[in-house]
Image (tube, rainbow, N blue to C red; front, side, top):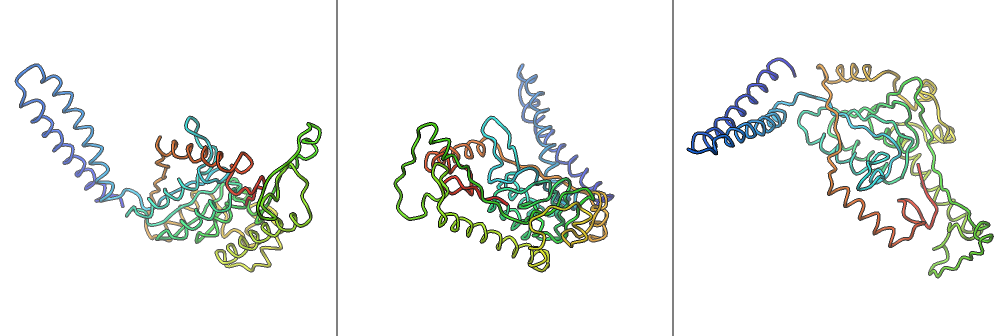
Amino acid sequence: MAGADDIIRGLLVVIIVGIGTVLGWVLFVRTPDNLAQLLGVLLVVAVAVATARIGSNIAGSLLPAHNVAEVAVEGPISRDGGGGITSPPVGASADDIVEQIDRADADRGSEALLLKLNTPGGEIVPSEDIRIAAEEFDGPTIAYATDVCASGGYDIAAGCDELWAREGSIVGSIGVVGSRVNAKELADRLGLSYEQFTAGEYKDAGVPLKEMTEDEREYLQGIVDDYYDQFIDTVAEGREMDAETLKDTEARIFLGDEAEERGLVDRLGTRDDVKASLEQRLGEAVTIKEYEPERGLTGKLRGGAQQVAFALGAGIAGVADGDIEGLSFRR
């Protein structure tokens, strides 16, 4: 990738900048005959800077300086990463991460995908969206666990060709949790009573202001069990492991070395070790490009509007994705 490509890339940038500078000089310096020439000089500089950026982008597109794309999944996984219009995301935004993987896949320079995982998991469907995007990447996909690769993070790793980890990485938690707050006694002390009009026997199952019946508990546990079976099947297929072996982990977490012994991790090593392995796989020196989300103000406004609209429609108990009347399902 280096050598001749670097020289040609540099020449392309120089040529494009030269064209932009000459064009700016003709338009803004040579043509005017008045004091506007001073402004023209400034405009020439602006045009030169703009064309330099354009030239760099064009050269990078025609002759990429990288051959591996890196996308990070860090923090709890949700649809939009949390945060709002005035605050940054507090976790991993599935929509942003999928968009980054898609951009890397469309980039002619990205021959392989390195997925950096440092997440305890999170919402079920957003985690699956990231895994599917990794599976659809056209090229080798390597997952690299740093501190934590648990639950939904391990679901994502199951969509990659290999999973690397450190000896001290926390790996596993192949399970599903459904939780609810029981506020019935507190409501009674405050003199609050629950009254809700529903159609359908289990529509208000899990509402925290009333006691849960045995039928409701069985119904909700069935949903958790179904999610768990789906998770086991996904990991068993992606990791080519026996489903019973995965169930025997009982959703425990393991340090990297034990996770490797159990077959939950393919190899242990540092990021440099992963890079060296990629060089052997690709048969050339590896240069990594780190992708960042391109979510601007419009995206933040759209995400904020969706949160408000959903809160108005579903009520405070159902704001979080994956909630059913106050019951939250997570991987």
